[in-house]
Image (tube, rainbow, N blue to C red):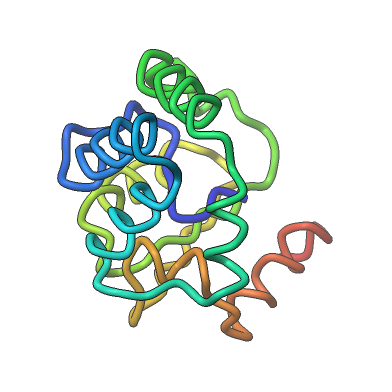
Length: 144
C-alpha cells in the first residue's frame, strides 16, 4: 500500500517546505509548532487523539527521518521490476503527488491507482471510505 505518497523523490513543493519549516520550528519550540504548521497548511484542526499522537513525537527524531527521506530520493531505479501487488491511493486534490502516483501506477506491473475524488493529501490519509477499505482488502488478499 502506498497511501498519499509515491516512490519518487519528494518534489520541492509547498508541502515539502511546510514540513521542513515546521520541523525546524519544532526543534526549538516543541512539537506544537509542527502540529500548528500542518494544521495551517491544510486549514484543519486535528482531532484531539491525532493531535496528541503528533505532540508525543520527538522533534529531533522526526527531523532526522525527514532529512533521510529527502536525501534518499526515489526508492527504486526500476519500478517495472516490482512483482508484488501494489495499491496506490491518492487524493484527487493532492497537488504534490498525484502526477507521480499516476506515473508509478503505470510503471509498476501489478499496481492499481485509486484516486479519492473528494480528498487532498491530508484527507486521503484520514479516509475510511468503504471503497478504499475494500480496495485495501482486495489487494492484500490478491483478489482481481
